[in-house]
Length: 303
Image 1 (tube, rainbow, N blue to C red):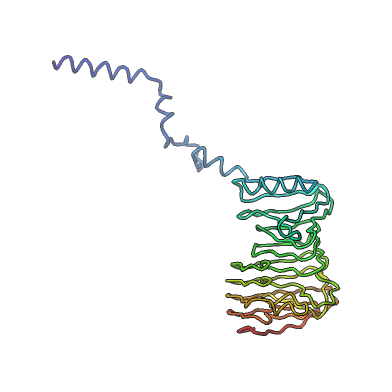
Image 2 (cartoon, helix red, strand yellow):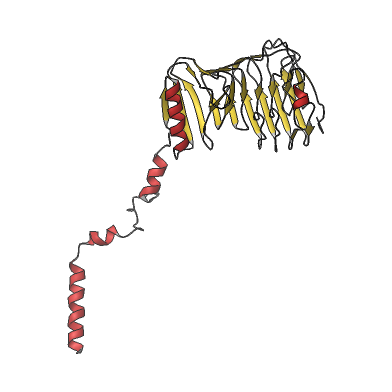
């Protein structure tokens, strides 16, 4: 019996010795680099690939309203959280069938950068009221419309673009309460340039809605506005037209409100305030650097 066991072990040892050494090396995940006198780092293949690869946001080229709608649908259903839309022509969004005067742009949970075809400046037009439904950066594009509601999403108009709104821009929603607001306007153009009905210029909060947290509004582009009308990072009752405030619910900003105003080439003198006619639960910061406006606070805790 002992002889059989010993002979079996000897056969097994001979078989193992006859296998190629590469078979062992293939399974050795801790193989050492050859000693060349230099320090080397050996990474698993997946980690080495991750270091060399770069993530590029998918890009969608659009020339028509239908193509834009299709691109937004694809972005909304994609696993990617970043996307770029390149305008090959001027594009006008369609108003929704329910209201007849509101057009939506964006995708919830996604950040969309809108650009024009290289060397051009195309228009992205909201026929009347525009409402954003996701984070947006508008680069070398001309955003036009009546009123624009950023709807609590992070919204940036870069210095490469333009903005032309005949009425008010709101950081918050349209008759909707949002969590917080963040708007940067570095583009050139106008917002409510000639309204004689008292409409606000730029408001950090919502229209007939509140902001639960903080609001942030930064205006550093060359923006024409109607002098005497309101610019504030907080909230307002109504849209500024006669009697509209009477129909507004009690609105508030639950956090802090901040404004940076550096409208160097402006000849208008808007009424810059922290908030007006509504409750400001946090503090207000008004950083007025240039532009002719005078700042003061009403219904705010600290300025």
